[in-house]
Image 1 (cartoon, rainbow, N blue to C red):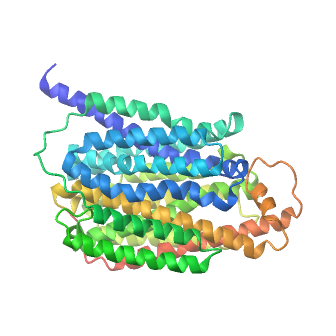
Image 2 (cartoon, rainbow, N blue to C red):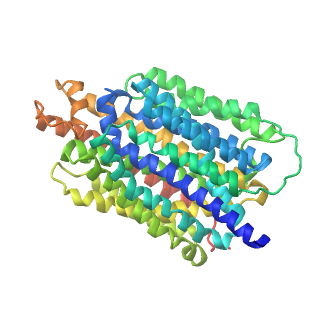
Image 3 (tube, rainbow, N blue to C red):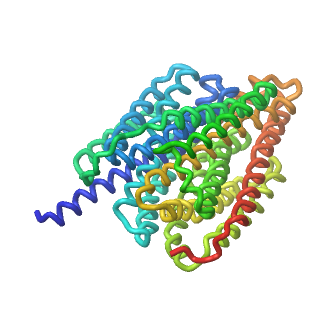
Length: 484
């Protein structure tokens, strides 16, 4: 075998590993959200339901910029392998969790691994392919999202209905082991110059203070306003400390130079806000369909599938759009349509056609498939080559942070709405009603349905606000030219 064919074979193995890793982290969302109502009900965890997602997203957010910096300095392979190993271990422990507290801790461990896996899949693609090729390769890699959209809800529903919710976490274990083997065999990383690693410990500390305080603050929104205010103040102090620290650091964790380009900043902000909207329908469409329409977990999960499939289809058009149209105007058009669609959702009643949920999810997937894919490619293209790992980590951090904060805010908004509107209905009955596997008719069923509907309306009102903020942010983008 010639050297060139060996290189092609090695690259094929690495791309296969990237594909499986992308599938592994994306199927995590579709399977868990499909099983979430059952997990909440079985573990009696309605009051803590947002932590199942938030713990995972928080640790992902905190570790992502650390891994991005390490990948730029130490190389991709070791950091990627470490992330896959920790993610796989966290998946196994999540499946073994006997109660809600252990599950939340195991999900946090999963997030520590995902903080490396998610950004480095994009970074490895950027290392192997030019700017012109990236849109096509990322679109091909997005087939992993499409497959996870098809397989995830079906597999998740099957496992919940026939075995138990524990198995929705076990499925990632063999996938993680497969990725480790492929990377070990195929990844031949070029030698990097020996550089003394200067860890920005102060930056890591301030980032952790800011993110942890923010998440804890949104978790207290619905019942401890004074604690919330205190935590928000701590978060502001953390942000201020991070800002000063990164401007003084020799090797900053988050290099401020990246944000001197306003268009880069807009891409990160857009991805962050849209990811907050993304977690809403991924989490609450299945809950809406299971609790109010009593659809089985598999059918409800397919609402998320239609979105992911259209995301995949739309991503194949991103290369053409970037080559011919100004990103700013494309984003404004797409997000305006999504804003109108979600605003209409706020006026739905208990007789709203089920089919329209799948249509809304498909429109959402199409729009986000275009916009977030553009954000990904542009955030890598608008920085120097030696910052691609850090820039990709910032993009992933923005997405994780948007999901983390909004997952907590949605949970707080839902709980607040339920408590304000439930009257004499016990919270335990709401806990039972939110799962699709309750077969008995609950007392005050009609009143319970109305309370749940009001709570879901409140959640999606927040989504409309997010989309309006995306529009305002992109109006601020100074770029009015096609980016080459």
